[in-house]
Length: 153
Image (cartoon, rainbow, N blue to C red; front, side, top):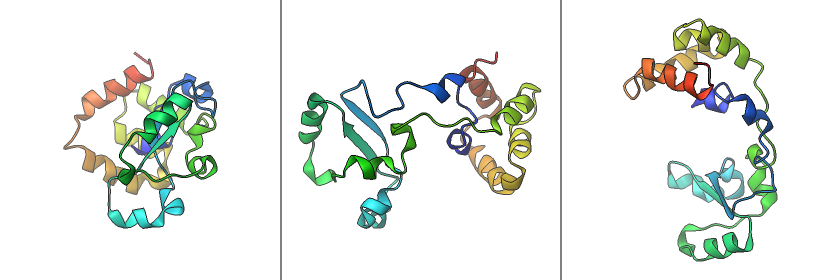
């Protein structure tokens, strides 16, 4: 997850994605609502696994959202929605440490070694997260997933 958030696993095309803008081509956009605690502080007390952001981009999308159960909807304005959700405005910036990570990864280094070399200052915290992930994923298969994702193979 941190690698995704840091932009280590993105393809080059992600950094110039024409869909990461306010001019959306879909009727509805769904994603994580980062920063919801600023807009609706009372929702942070619910201890949920996160809050989704649903945006109506067209009249059809807006009318569809209005048909949802109002008990689960909280409305906000576009400005509040995009403050902590940068990809709604523009593509993610390329992480300068991505090249270090990929260089090490191509040399068939262990995943945690690649993270350590790319982020030495955060290694302790990241290493703990990686070891917590091990029961859920097989590291060998994860490596090939990333390689396929980046079209390195």
